[in-house]
Length: 323
Image 1: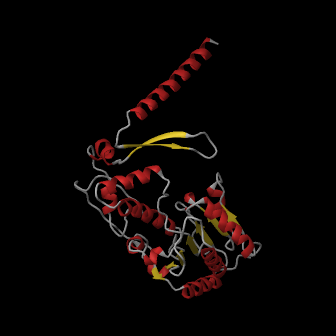
Image 2: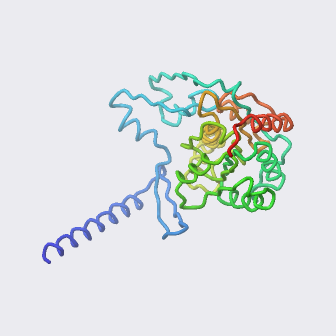
Image 3: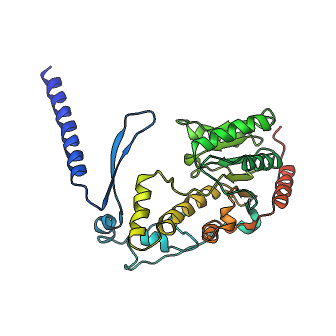
């Protein structure tokens, strides 16, 4: 009993020390820190704090001590490393960058289609015109579609629409829910080429479905940071206050990396072919659209819906039967 009591006291003391340290950090937060209340959804609200920039911390703890090699399939934005180098505070350091390319022939294996005729996305979720186009692409592909959304509301709206529009017996609809095991969903999707998988953030990266089970990746909109994201909003304001453009320096590079990760779900093998369809006309019409497109694999680019539908129908007809 004495041992149990001692352990309980030590545990309580540790918890109080954690509270003391956290409170001290919050009370001494300066202009280089961002503090906000995360209301949570299925848990209690959490008071959070993060540095406005991690550049100084990384330089002191990592880059000044030893040579560092960083590798990733998605380090470039707009075809270059400038955004990454700036975000890490390495613009004035000795940095060597290298893009070794890809083993895939993206221009021959894939199409980047931007739905330039659709209205620009608003704050009310996925527009009906975009949902109609999504359904048309799914029908042309015979299922075999991974649809990525920037919000849970978008997933739910698309699921409700497609349950009415599609024959879900012929084209099973797999819908990600909060808390779902992503691996199990992806396995179901890969096992049934006629199926469609709808999901959000956790499906934008790490999903590997080679072959004809996924010949179409649809992205509902450019994944800019949410306007109610306190940390990203504070970082954009800091750049604006310094005379720069927070949107171009923070929001566009962030969106470019996420867009590249989402588009990377399509070509997973040397024999894979298909379409990445972005249902956001701004990727074709806005001034920043060219930089974002340059962040993507070098697919053959078009805004011609008829050509894309025809290409998907041919790929569907060429695919082995799932029977």
